[in-house]
Amino acid sequence: MEDFFKYLTPGEEDKSWGLYLNVAGKSTIAPKTIYPDIHHPSGYFFNWEKGRILDEFQINYITEGSGELETDFGKFLIKPGTLMINWPGIWHRYRPKQKTGWVEHYIGFDGELAKQLLAKDLFSPERPLIYCELREDFIDTYYKIFDLILKEKPGFQQVSSGMIVKLLGYIVAYQKQKQFSGKKIESTIQKATFRMRENIAAEIDLQKLAKEHNMGYSYFRKMFKKYTGVSPHQYHLELKIMRAKELILSSDKSIKEISFELGFQSIYYFSRLFKIKVGTSPSDLRK
Image (cartoon, rainbow, N blue to C red; front, side, top):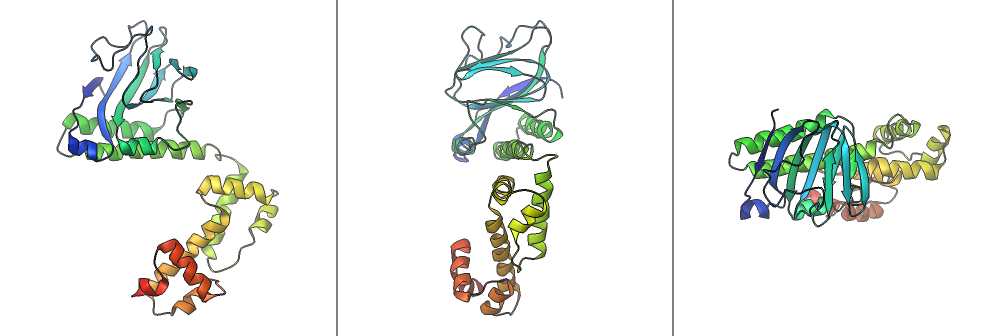
């Protein structure tokens, strides 16, 4: 894609959506070039001496070249395959190295939903860089956003906001997956989840499973929760509840039969747990 930049004028309807774009672009900065471009509007332009403070979030993907970033929280090295996240209200400045230049892809956005998503633990202004290498799913998302704003058809803001959420999801997934990639614990967790799905009604001895793979249960449980978002017990329980919903809605089996079939020894415990998880009782769901 050729270099471009475009500043947008989101309306009240766009802003009420919860996440909206303000700016996007791609720039190829040649070695020994003045940075940033002097044609940027005053709200975005900055020089190295003063830096700047934005009123929005910006995610800048550096795919070639290297440089440096400095914020209120320190100095950081930028290399190819770096995602740089700048936060509203945080002073910062960045630039490519004179001898390398760089290629940057950037989006600036804001909104209540944006604030909620970036308030998650995996994002922090104290850790503004994510080294993710060159990823096709990341750059493809940028290009899809660029295509939407260049055409600027009705509703493009809403579709673009969905693509930004998708990009943030990719970032979260990447950060989670890199903790497990190529490690023994990943295959152990996958075997455990497979065994749970294949034996939803059975009582699975996960402590024995961890021991079979020469690891302590506390470590296995901790890593399982990081990998799936829930503990092994809760994961298995959620599978049982999902299966119960299917049987309640698609079979003629009684609630008692379903509860026993899924390994619950008490229909009262099953009904109480089901209501907590689903928000309604098994009998009310069937009605």
